[in-house]
Image (cartoon, rainbow, N blue to C red; front, side, top):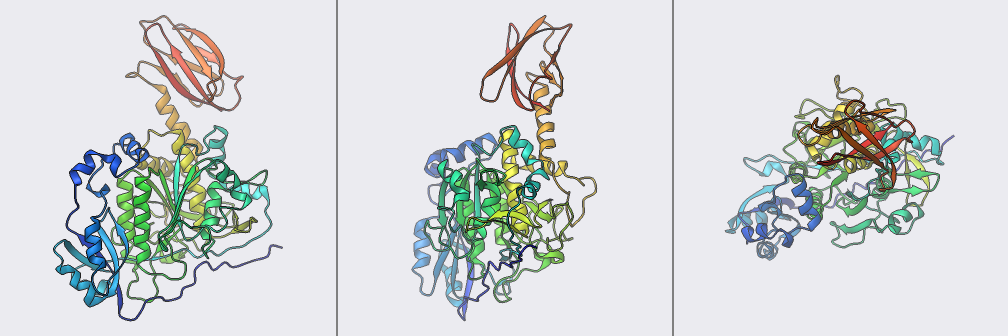
Length: 534
């Protein structure tokens, strides 16, 4: 018998002071925009610039920081506290009395004010949140069962091909990462130097390891955790930024703004993937609450921020929520976010997993992964089980990061669509499992086949790919023969073939299962391909 332990990660204690309101204050302009865009290294890291260039993402005014003199003037206003800022929205999140906030509209550089209490906005609509509570069941770890959560989506096949997340960067936005800096389950991550940075946007410091909530530790373990012969996360060799955006002691709209700030920082740091096991629909009190109709992909502040993050080229993978029939919550409602529902170890829908509704502009959830009795590493370095879409999301986020490592030429939108198309019920989606359980190995096979068949305006062909035994080569007819050289992924030479136009097949059945590099040479040119041996 497993011992059942219910984990209540959030203490829903109202913090709001009577008469205090939250609002977003939007500014009219920014300073030195043209100069900043012309010199992007002054506002972005080189990795961020390279990622944007690789995917054709423009560097624009949204990348330029908020005017600090504007922020200073808002801060100096009596009764106003500035809690967060957003360069994408050119705005700050403030708290104060309604009267004090309304006076900010008199400042020449303020374009408008939006209250989190939407009833105070005469002509505006608005937004909200909740961190998914973890309905957890902890038990002694059984490695065979733990393997199921990655094998279900064929993420283990990516690992066999040496796609383990190396060179990719994931930002985890959550509520706390206690003991990640000391516990054995993350020693491999630390030793490799793969924690690139940390920041607590709630308390405004770099300490994310002493937070009261252990939610982020559990979430991170499903991607980066490693205990030899017992547990391996889905992206063990990726690099990570750990950001706290969730205030575990309360539920207020400012947490949406913290999230947007963190997403902006992730973009400036060149992050590839953002994992979010947070969702917003129900705040302390009722006046900020979102309705089901607000989950329309365009209302909640965090959803609007997620849409901008997507435009910036990042891939956003988010828990669908643990609200069951109430429906998905923000930012999972965005069509630009890959929202992940939960199934059990057998692939069956679990009742807590948030469903899609008629309010979303796209199919929700997008896909599902194991969130029923998923395996995690706790902050006490114990391998255990827990329930929640909080875990199906990182399980899939890590694996998809490995997939993107394998096919880096794909855009975030293309990766999302390939994942959807690979899923078990793509042609017959529903609001419980969305498009179903994805098969990431099939995504890679299809992508490599398309990419490796042709080169140089279809003058070179290498097929089938993946290959079992016989590999065929076609090349321009003006050359009678070509040479095929095979290498492993480390560049070690394996063998060569001389191939003629009359006999363009080679036998590769002796190769072990895995990824290889094939170089095809003629007298006039050479082309390099990736091939997968099944």
